Length: 193
Ligand code: FNR
Image (tube, rainbow, N blue to C red; front, side):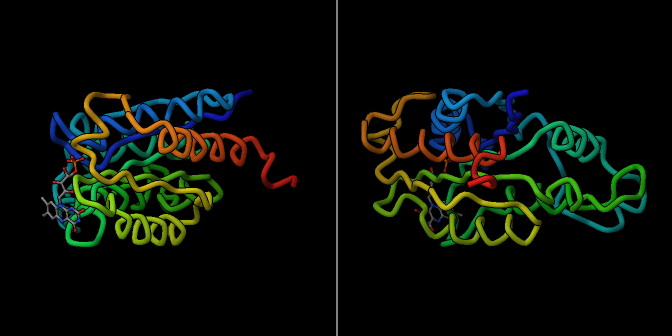
C-alpha cells in the first residue's frame, strides 16, 4: 500500500505563500508514490492551549486532527517564520495533538515513528530558514523522523504567484525532492538502506 501523508501549511490567511507552496511539496511526494491528504488548519480552529479547556472536555477539532494523524504514515508541513521561529499556530496545533487521546494513550504516540518533510516560504531573502530549524527540532522531539532535505523559499512574493506554482525550476525540484524523500522513508526504503 502507498504511504499516506498528511499535509498542511502553518498559516491561516487566504493568500499565504505557504498555502501556495504546500501543493508543490505534496506533488513531489505523490510523484514518488505517496497518497497525500491536504488539510487546511482554518478548518480546525483551536484555542490557544489551555489545560482548563482540556479538562472541561477535549475540543472536537483536536480529536479530529488526532484521528487524521492516526490514519497517516507521515507529515508534510510548509511553515512561515515569525520572529525567527515557527508561528504559534503550528506549535499550538502540535501541542494539542500531543495531548491524551480518547482511549487514554498519549497523543505523542501518534507522532512516534512517523516521517516528516518540512519547507518554508517568506517574502524575505532567507525564506524562513530559521523556522525550519525550530520546527525540525520540535517534530524530532515528538518522535518523528524528519528527512534531512529541506527548502526555504525566499522572495516568495515573486516565486509563488499562485497555489501550487513555484516559478524557480531548481527550487521546485528541491521541494519535490523533500516530498519524495518522505515518501521513500515512509515506505521503509530509507530504513532498509
Ligand atoms: C513575520 N515575517 C517574517 N518573515 C521572515 O522571513 N522572518 C521573520 O522572522 C518574520 N517574522 C514575522 C513575524 C510576524 C509576527 C509576522 C506576522 C510576520 C513575515 C512573514 O514571512 C510573512 O508575513 C509571510 O507572508 C507569512 O507566511 P504566509 O502567511 O504568507 O504563509
